[in-house]
Image (cartoon, rainbow, N blue to C red):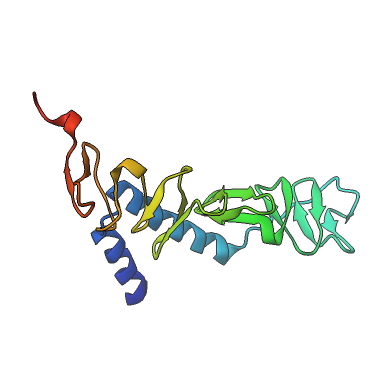
Length: 171
């Protein structure tokens, strides 16, 4: 393992990202590296009309379960041929995104819902704000301070720091 990779892992673990999300980002990155090393293509393509002796032929060179994908397509989950530009692969997650969506962390996101950090990308729910690689509810976002308040807190009136929510204060 290179020092560069260890530095990235250490930065993820030391960041403000919740530990569970940090471990998921690291695991996803490692799984993607393994998948890239061994390739994501299926090795069997039997019973397809585009095969000869179980091997893909002609313009369908990529075996995919019981069929063969055309050049420029990826075989996802050993079952679906997906145009390369729409293939969304992250770790063990493999989906075919529709045109106009963006792949983020193995999910297909609508434009404007992608939240990225150097550790990866995720899809935020509608109306959420991306703050330092995490999705933040509008009621917990402090615009001036560009911070996301944790549960039970809200922005102060100046909008630059978090204070306990009024609902969480004792009577």
